[in-house]
Length: 471
Ligand code: AMP
Ligand code: ZN
Image (cartoon, rainbow, N blue to C red):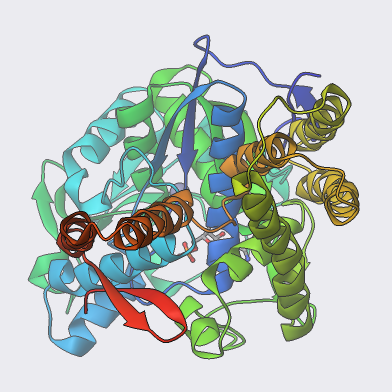
């Protein structure tokens, strides 16, 4: 089955094809780095991680770019409040953002460009827009002329003629020709710190938020991208404006597939900083939730459905994950027990059927719930086989490989290194015990020293040999 994705632009499911064979270019709107992201933001970032992992799982190469919005009203306010330069202020929040991505096992994007490192690229787009009649300067700021772009509203299905002309948004926007127009470049205002303004050929000021994403996506991914993602609140005005700017400047289609994640909600309301109904990742870790459980919860609900966050759902995620891990551990034991031969063909073909169903789930617009459903029915059958003693060590090893293959997308099982480290240490300990038995103390000591050099300390206790990492 081919991969189908729901395209926000057409509001329909489309068979995916990449512009360049075998290579997918994905732009994902990143965080505004003025505080710690909450798990709602992280749900969107996990969705984008799953998207890229599915592509790689299917054999594509991916280039994912995620911007860091390090200049806007909130970052400026934060920097001023803490008496820091904009760069120093945002650096702290970029660091915690990367920490959170790593904690959740989100595979790194190819580039994390910062808006403030791309001012020149943004100015160049504004110049092109001016040349093509889409932009005008007024009182030190530059605006996008919505009336000049007939396609405006195509993505969000907002009718520009219905955008209220009377609704003047803020006093400082009276200089626009038309209230619907949006800022490309904001002329410097009283009281704005030195570290948050740039002197360019457009004058002294700073870029508008939408312009950042047009500039950085096209710089790293080309003028036409395969996929652009965000959460649903990004559709209007952010992504609508990105299309107007990018297509207005290049005359080419900007994005082939737009994908938007639904929100993580609490009691039916969007989790957000301003409402105060949020948890950060450290909040949940402090309550004892394991990172892999949080990841599991965030990806278990298909991205186009709202995810209602509750502690009950977190507990349910923990027990689902435990079922998976416990099977994996018992399979590892069985796989390590003596007995040769190949896995039974009937068993192998059942795993292959399970994998095909899981794949069908992923290919159906990343239907993670369907994929997990298929996974757990294979888990249930395999558990039954294992308990009934029907699995040979080779069967168990094949079942573990199946779990590992699925986990390339899910990323929720413990890292293989740990499992193999444990196995390697146990094997060394056995070899040392064998050496002692045959009174070859030199060999036994040399094994102990070898482990010590690798940071593993052995303790001989009355219950047998124990090992720990060197403190
Ligand atoms: P921001 O830092 O506000 O620009 O948000 C970063 C990303 O998180 C954007 O793509 C937002 O649309 C997304 N986002 C914000 N709140 C939520 C939420 N409650 N659930 C899912 N995604 C969200
Ligand atoms: Zn963006």
